Length: 192
Image (cartoon, rainbow, N blue to C red):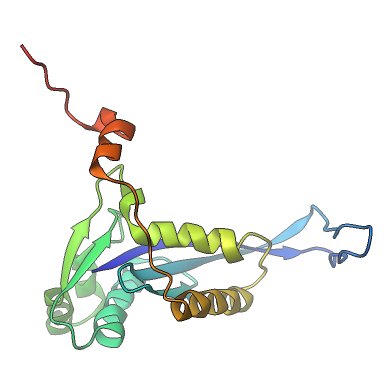
């Protein structure tokens, strides 16, 4: 089982050089910034193994998604017969886009190796890749990153550290908790 999600990241550069902290003085940073566009982060997570992989791209199109699926099948799991892929219902997350990116035989070959499980419409938080993207944001992407190269370097360091430690996801949310917290999503049964 592999979870997949994506997130865009705004690239924000400094207008003036930040002043580092010194004894008795905090670091200073100008509130002005330069917007340098956006980058997209595609994340694969195998929660039971403690493995994750992040690809940084300049765009988020159906074709980019198709190439991520090919990488999943051919690079990360070439010997696996069937990959259960958990992902949300984003408009680009359609296996049919593989036919736009590849010749029909290649698209069919990739699709046959992937069984898709979509998270519920209002339950994308059930996707472990979304949880990992949140951890990535908090642990290494919180401050200004001005260019794609710096973004790639930071993510590579974070990714290598998490994989080296085989940081598994300890999912604690149980069905009984969901019935309480998300009760508006469950049908009301009227007893007579």
